[in-house]
Length: 378
Image (cartoon, rainbow, N blue to C red; front, side, top):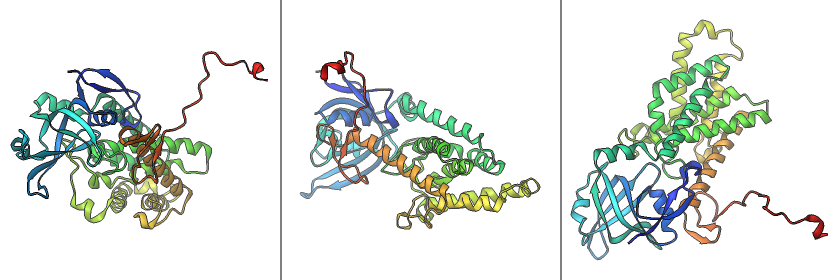
């Protein structure tokens, strides 16, 4: 029997779907199915990778398997009870296995988005299906490619040759790793390539702000934005072959801010030694440039209690902090509208760390087709 589901609109913001209904069971992303399930059970197929597989036991002593499944943009938990026909198969799945989950999905009042108990099947993906999944949805793939091109092109506009050389050296050495990293593990841009999206959008905002506040050093801000989360190449790194976000000992023990500071210092030492004669007569001095860039990285969380070793003390540092905060928060709103539990028309459940329930934005003004004659209202 045919079931309704949602088809993703290509104009969606930050890879979260603004969706329209159509009839027919089809292959969807987790985000699309999650959004559709807000309105009731939906039959669909999803292609996913196993992020974790854990054997667990209910209070009554009944065993079950808990799988965390991920695709390019989202993840879900699948609880496989011992009486399910696929229990043995799912219990034997290895981390990073690729599977198709096909069946009925719904929004559980306690457990959230999940597959309906005993109303789903699972099978391994073919090599072609696996390769297609790794590429991500076409619109997300295109967006991240365009964002990467924008970052690369913008770096070429940096006037200060020292900062431009630093950016170029970073992308040359760590570019492929950069393109796999997430901007966060949970709250915003927490997907493969999310750091590219976040960085590109921050640079766009910085370029607009610099036109309004010309006292800002745009070269410094562009470079600071590129490097502010560079430590997340280790802290929030995805594996080369999927959507499992690995844990790295350097990221765990040192943290992304400290790693970012070290990356800049390491590259700066190398470049300054190679260009000692050329850099000697530049103004401002190379040491001043380095220190101000390090300050942008070290202060971008804004407050010491939020992880920054120092609070913003320059206009560029303060602007970068607020741009970072703005882009991350607006991404959380976009995600919440697509995935959070509806509470009432236009109102959605809270998405942490946002401060309260989400409310849909006021629609933009549109002139009606037959506007009322203002004279008749007088």
